[in-house]
Length: 154
View 1 (cartoon, one colour):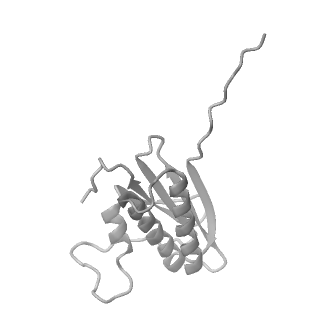
View 2 (cartoon, rainbow, N blue to C red):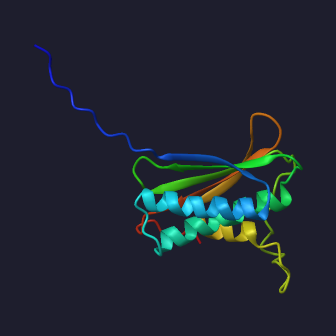
């Protein structure tokens, strides 16, 4: 007699996709991240959803505009924490230059079209950073809180 084994459904908690290092690629990355967030149960229009998608938009836009190497893509990877409390956003590109946030004592110039991306990421994420990746380039990552009990760090 064989015992009946029930399989536990597997929930995919990682999303990885490569995109062309263009504005269109960055926009597509944001749209797919929004769809993934909804599939993971993050309510569209919630503060957590809006903050998460803004972080994705800033990091992918930075990669497409400042980390672009002709002929090379960037990669977006999203990792949902096992307890559902946060999503790690990782954006990898092949450009060797590491991003630097604008220091608080030198805020972005009013009217300028750039210089705010990492300031926004720093304000919305629990933490963020840059690390080397296998091969050329770097990975910029940010941990976005999903729980309302976790106040923003600033």
